Image (cartoon, rainbow, N blue to C red; front, top):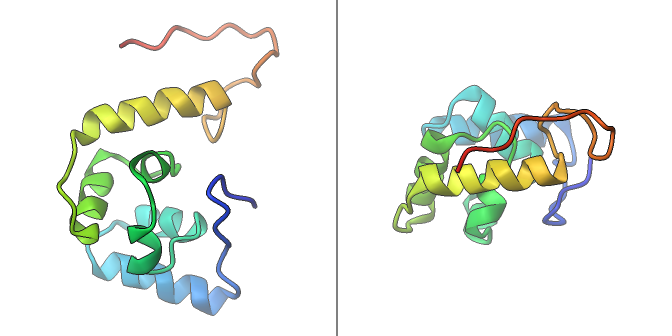
Length: 114
């Protein structure tokens, strides 16, 4: 699976498992740890190289996990609810991981509240 950021996937299940467990030990839920690992963030160095939107765009990373990621980066926590909302709208436009109908399929979707 490719990533928008060009990050690579773990090279083995063992690497995936170790990275996922490391994220859990830092306070992330199992789902968030797996999502972060699947997105190519295997360690703090990978996390520190990410920008705000890149982190917010990771599927299955919610506002609470996003706030924790900023703390782990050693950065001031932004208004994560607002950032998360922007990322959801952007994902919806790109139709990445939303589970919705494909763009241009003719299926109408309700407008996004702002």
